[in-house]
Amino acid sequence: EAGVVQSPRYKIIEKKQPVAFWCNPISGHNTLYWYRQNLGQGPELLIRYENEEAVDDSQLPKDRFSAERLKGVDSTLKIQPAELGDSAVYLCASSPRVRQVDNEQFFGPGTRLTVL
Amino acid sequence: GQNIDQPTEMTATEGAIVQINCTYQTSGFNGLFWYQQHAGEAPTFLSYNVLDGLEEKGRFSSFLSRSKGYSYLLLKELQMKDSASYLCALNDMRFGAGTRLTVKP
Image 1 (tube, rainbow over the protein chains, first blue to last red):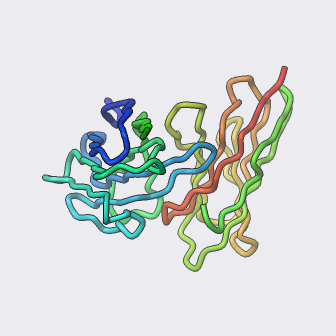
Image 2: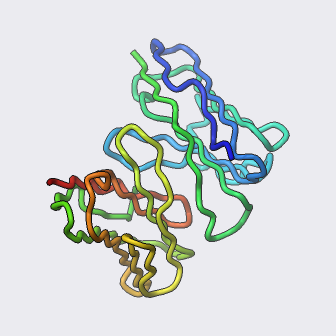
């Protein structure tokens, strides 16, 4: 079974430029998460989707970040414009079911973003 | 992560046993996860506890005390490949900062 796929794996951009990350979850997984992880820290949830609905985006900086999950399958996270502090690893994860308390998350390899 | 505390670093010897603690504060508890994350890689699931007590899974065990807001991950017969960060996370998707474990020969 293929795991969570993310692209690109690495991205270097200059500040004020836009950037987009793509995630394809494990087939059949209804819940999708986007996290940001800074060096030496745990992942920080940005947004959670149940199917195509964003059910938790309270930590998403909406002035510059946006996300979509059309058709409830793959998802895109965008930053526009990027700032120096956005340099981090952006992780996508998926879980099999919605509203399930023991929902194990399967993580993708992440996209390492460097903003210069 | 806010209100989830873990030691930053630990060191142990190959073949030994190590216990990694996690304390948390939450208004609505629905379970606690442990994940392993090797440097430069994604986290992978280790265990899930929702009831008090010890859950054993091979060399790894996880313990939970809901009344104390406390969990630990126990790693037995340590191997060099166990060198990684260990993250505890609540069911509301809040993660601790992780404990970086170094296993020495």
